[in-house]
Length: 531
Image (cartoon, rainbow, N blue to C red; front, side):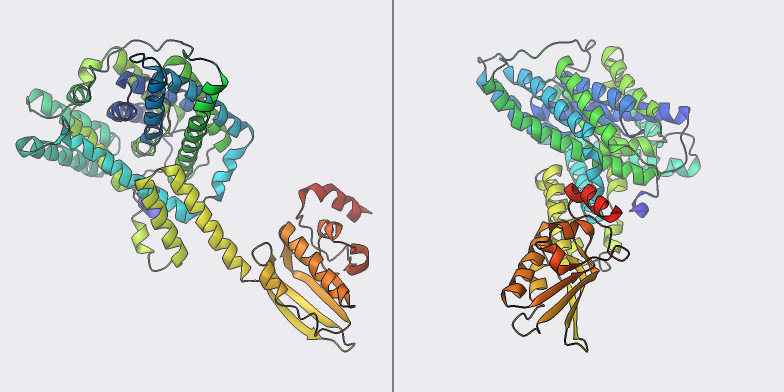
């Protein structure tokens, strides 16, 4: 996927780069946080608080320097149902949905932190490359579609001069971001583009959509507010409440961790460095818990803003800290100026992110990779766009796993011959596991075999309990036909699980393999070998 991200400078960042890239990210976070708050049916200030607290805590304590977290659309689409149901459960006009959201975020954070403590972040390594390609392609399309909503006002598409002006400024922003790095890499192209377009709009008194008009169109008043304050969610602590919020908490925790860990994996590839998944899980959980107590929307890692940060030169934790603190300063002191920023400039930045995020090399390898991988890429891309990231990734991993199991199931083979003493030999090749058991059994002609049979597993590997049971049943069938069977080159723990092993297993300490199919028998096997 490296060719997809050739625009990313892989050199180490500097304090200047971190500060400037952080400021750029902060500007890009404003409309995103506001938009996702509207999606969830809550105040834009709650979305901005969520982006600030998520960004600050994960920047300081997270497992991936340079990665940006904040309020995200993937979680917002779940929150909207939670808030609606919560409002319906309370007194009319009491807006209890927001309180249930805060309580759910606390429980979500506990689940996420627990995932980190139990070292579950490592499972991101099991996500195939085809799923990753589908993930970035789908997410690029989702980001693109989300930006199309910025071309609306009062729910209607822009037309005429307003549309042409918007498109023109979007194009100007993209042109600056494309051309400026070719002249100098000392200035963050995204920030310069935003400032340039903003100055043209402000001093040229050009009529176009701004952050202020976007917020007002969504029913908000502005982004100015005070510091977030501590509050315990005002809900009834009962079994019914827990029953209501737990499913939502599990879904939010799963989506948040999957998106965060996959973004971490992607940033690792971009920067050719290595993040710490388990630490990121704990940091994400802590950030959502804080959001629940301080009135934020919560969230997870944001691939779009993370790529803006990396592309602008942000590499260290300082970039994320500056982004979060700048966002807070916007809320406290600079709301008037930030609300003047034209939406077109921010849309142009996000369109460049779309271009950089999409795995264009997918089309180059289309005729060179196996058909199942192509199907997985398309499946994950489509599911990400239609449903959500968590469902898409889970489906992609399941399909990839089934394909892998099927292909390996077909690799089981047996070389057969009868020696000079009339003994039938079966030399087994390939992995023996639940998927290959049936094909393994088909290799043996018990009724036709001589009185003595040797099955050699030197070139095979026993993978699971299904394989052990298949061997046991095969031995029983031979014995039931009055024939003697010998099993060779099984690992020590396999021998320990074979029925009547002392009679049918030929143990050779020097030649038998060392793999362990049953972890509970690990110490037992080691002890038998030492004796």
